[in-house]
Structures are given as structure tokens and as C-alpha cells.
Length: 372
Image 1 (cartoon, rainbow, N blue to C red):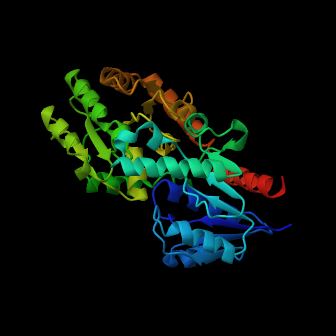
Image 2 (image 1 turned 135 degrees about the vertical axis):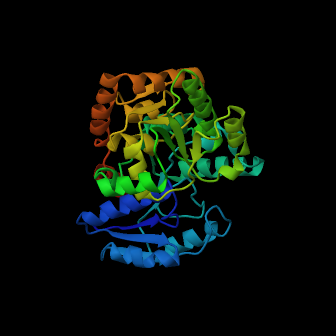
């Protein structure tokens, strides 16, 4: 029997959750179905929803995310659209929702690292709504076994209720940028020297400060020709990072590019000699896979979900030890056979993460709730 399935798509353009929602609904649109998808969205995204196909209906909602108002408007949206199931793509689920719920909890970072939240209220909010979401949902989707373990530990959800569905790799990284596009990025940013790349945000758990310390050690050991490029916005919120660069006298060798468009990022992955991702915690971790798909050797942390995601296609290091990070960088840069092996393994590994597969398994979760 056809079902009416609502998905909260108000964060359609956000990094992370927006990437997740966009790829899922685009894959749903590619598969024939008798189900109807109602996407609760910003008014300006209604045309995007309609363009997905006749089985998609936009339902505009102007409530801000993480607001009191959304606790009232979203349940009202669901009643008015007479849906059979609601998928919340992040942890906020109003207790007023009466239909069956599937919730995606990407990670438990707010519970593992409460010190990174702006204040105690933010922690109480996160813990309250993650707990409500986990209890209220018929099924919880998460993106790695590491996150499943955390959900069981911090939220007390039974293992049988949690489905691990890995994210996919965005298709733009499966087709390499043209030589002209790569050359254009090289010229625009004056990339005349080989460089190590980091991409992601620069919040404290991303561990960028230890990457800078490792880079300083690498230069002292003779790699004077290498630059370090850091891509991540909101640098002004973390002045300690710039102070660290100056303390090590690296201001002429470390560049902060801030946010860059996807096409530019794809070219930078291609140009980099090495990609280093020393994060202390990831629910999944897209950037290492994107770098692998671009043919760039990867060094990643040996903690959280990252070993699960990168498999045997990256060099794993203790992210709390700058000397270990520096030694791994020197090894990958200096050993031709290792570099070739990492590049080959990386190409293969990245292609095992498919949004088509993720969408198919997500629909199976919907149907298990609706018909199980």
C-alpha cells in the first residue's frame, strides 16, 4: 500500500545534514515508487522539491531549526499533510508528533565533548532532544558502527533499534576535474610549491592545532619545500590557531583559504601531495573519502569512526601525538611504493560508499516501520 512519508528538509543547504538530505531525496527520485514524499522545507526550496518529480510535495515551514516554534509547527505540518511516517534527519523530534518516526542521529559529539558547546543550556538542549528522539523513534539510523556504539552508551537505545547505514560519496568526486579546472585553481591560489591539505571545519575536535604542530616538526626534519593549506571557515572564532602558526614562525608557509566551492575543493584535493585528517571525533567523516576518490594519499586518526570509514586505504595515527602525525607524513611523502599503494586502495575504498545503496537501505527502514 502506498505511503505518505514526510522528511524534514529545512536544512537542505547546510553542510553535513544538508548533504545527507539532498543525496537521499535525489536518490529516492531516481527510483520508481508509489509512495509520496512530503518535504518540509524553506519556502525558497519549494521549486527544488517540485523538480524532483511528481511523487514529491513541498510543505513550506519558516520555523528556525532548534527553536521553540518548530516544536509546534512541525507536528502541525505532519497532521495537515496526513503522513504515515516522519523522518527527522537529525536528532530533534518534537514530543507532540503522533505518527511513527524514524530519526537519524549522526553522532553524539555534544555528549562526548560538552566542553565544545557554547554554554550549559546548549548541552541540556542537545541531551534532552537526543534522548527524546532516540526514545520516540521506531527506528534510529546512524552512519557508522562507532556512532551506534555511542548511541547505545549515551542514550540507552537497544542495538536492535539502530540501523547503521553508511553515507555515500558525492558523485562530483567520482568524476575528476578537468586539467584546465585544476590548472585554473593552481593559478588562482598561486600554488607553486607542493602542499599538504586539510579540509573540514576547524572546531576544536578537528584537532587542527596538532596538525600545525606536526607540520612544524616535519619542516624541522628537512621538508622545507612543503606548504600547509587549511580549508575551513569561521577561523575568527578560534584565534589560537593563528597564534600557534606565528609561534612556530610558519606564517609564510601555512595558508588559510576559508570556505571554497565544491569545484575548487575537488581541484585542491587533486593538487595536494597529501591529505591529513587528524580529527578526534567523527560520526562518519567525508573529507578522507573525497581525498581518496581524488587520488590523494590520506593520513587519518585511529579513533572514532575513521578506521571504519577508511579501512586499509589510509595511514592511521594517534591524533593526540604531533610527532606520530609528522612521522606518518614523512613516511608517505618519502616512500613511493606506499604512496602508490595508498592511492590505489583509496580509489577502491571510496567507491564502496554509495548514496544509491544508502537510499535503498533507508527505504527498507521506512517500510519495516510502516509494515513490520
